[in-house]
Amino acid sequence: MCSEFDRLAEMKKYVLKVFEECVKSVSPRNIVRNTLRFDSKKLYVNDDSSAYSVPGDVYVVGFGKAVLNMAVEVENILNDRLKEGIVSVPFGTQRPSSLQNSRVHVMEGARNNIPDRQSVENTDRITGTLARLRRHDLLIILISGGGSALLCSPTVPLHDKILATNLLSSGGASIEQLNTVRKALSRVKGGRLIEWVHRECTVISLILSDVVGDPLTAIASGPTVPNDDPDSLPIGIVDRFGLRDKMPKTVIDALSRNESFNGTSARFDRVRNYVIGNNAIALRAGIEYASRDLKAMLVTTSLRGDVALVATFYSDLVAYACALYAGATDRKLKDQLKITSSSVVGESGVDVESLTNSVVEASSEGRGLCMLSGGEPTVMVRGSGLGGRNQELALRVSLALGAARRRDDCLHRFDVLFFSGGTDGIDGPTDACGAFGYPALEDMALSQGLDPSLYVNNNDSYGFYSSFDCGGSDLLKIGHTGTNVMDLHILIIKPK
Image (cartoon, rainbow, N blue to C red):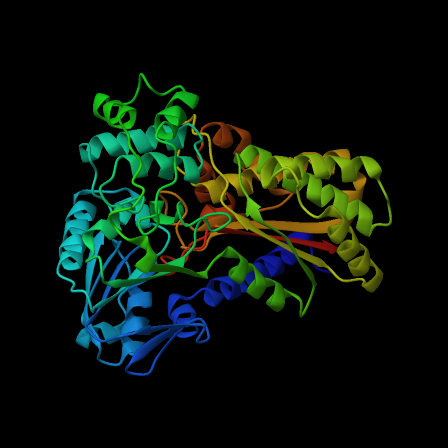
């Protein structure tokens, strides 16, 4: 009979397959291929629902972790009509072999997803290209996650803007709050990129979203849409986190005199923005794959908030699902799940009734459960360790599940495995995309002389996983995937 650890090893292999299917579904080339069609005179978008005449030249610019393969596929579709392409991508982005005879020029920047001098130079090259376009030309702008760091033209010294961003991020600011401040410190974000384009030139923007809810003003800090942030909002965010005295004077001065760009001079009526890939598409692919073997269900596409709260939510979710599967109808567990889900999803929380029906159905069929979620939690950095939100979440979930199993004998009747991973293949400043978590992890670590709680307190999840269980076997390292639609969480619960 297989041991618990043998069963966990098999579950890890299965989770990896589910994750791979999710990532494959948002492959930039597949997404673009399914979005565009060109017949030499017109470019069609989304099953021919939109058509654009192409009387002049076609230009492509892009910025983000996924835009290189997006640009290569656009060039293939245009069939020699591309005049010039230029993309700003992260250092280490793998180049497809088809680039050898391509008109797409590739520039690298933003090492560790932080804007740098290369990002600024790349942006200057992009705006210079945009300034050359004529009225009959067609511009295709490609945007994906990581675009904020790779499209960078700050109105303050670069190191001051980086410091401001780091202070907010370490303080727990959401991606929306970070982007609000970034827009107020930029010559190209918040719709200002369109100022560089001829007023009569048609612009099509193709976007892979890495923000919960796909708000166009937040993805890569909204370079192609008007900025509707109130002028006082950026400095208000700084004050909300109590950071005014820590911020560089140049940043405070710029935010204090901020005036949002409403775009009246840029003519946004000739700009069309299309979100062609997002977290929901990836999750649907994972559910379709897992449904062959397990009862698969979508929990939410909108997880956000501090990883400590998210870990509590998952612990409550496991406790409720296991009790329900075992035939118990614990109203207290159900109410607790509703409360914790509202703290990380929003006031309405997750659809607990639908979840209940799915678990009951799985129980009646004797099938295991595969629950998928997506979003982008945040980490409040208080320690000096190394890690990312996915690794810290997996470690925190492990601790929460271990504590829950010690309280509740019901959990001993199930194998539980949790995985959190970034679809871009990189979690924070590390070479891992995420990590696994499970109830027995804490006891195993203590037996090896490792205290996971100390690593959590020091925000050193990467240090923990690298030392734990023969050196990182619970870390997933896959390198840059070439796409980015936030994080994926995969939770498997199987009766022993």
